[in-house]
Image (cartoon, rainbow, N blue to C red; front, top):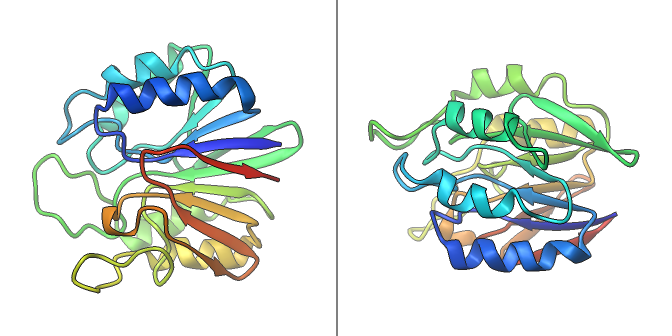
Length: 199
């Protein structure tokens, strides 16, 4: 299976169109959240991604309104919204969790979940599923500009418990393009460019 992945478009239509063009060579497209900016404009990029040649799996980011993402995906033939839920495609399991974990930003638009909430939502993650999360796992691909780790313990624990082969994430812009190993999993903080994986 060939996976085309990205995160943090933040209303960037040009980046969305590049993903649309590249989707002809993908078996699945994965978007790890933040289609909007400060709660505004998710549809600007999702409308473009809805025309992708391959199925598109998405989680919400901390800038997105989860109900809007869910409603848009429900109305689309191509987009599937994952949050505490999963899907199987051609024998490969995918499981998703959106938002910032744990909450670190006090803005009214920021969508966050506690570590306890995240643990409960990740409890049903199947063995060896590809994890799609907006927040990185704590300690891997999660270093902010000042050097602090801003990942999630719950996501880290779920990766290890499920023997995930791959975790696709974003959120921490200072770590875009950074990858590392956590248990069996390759963890990649994606960013808005085109990132490919073969599994």
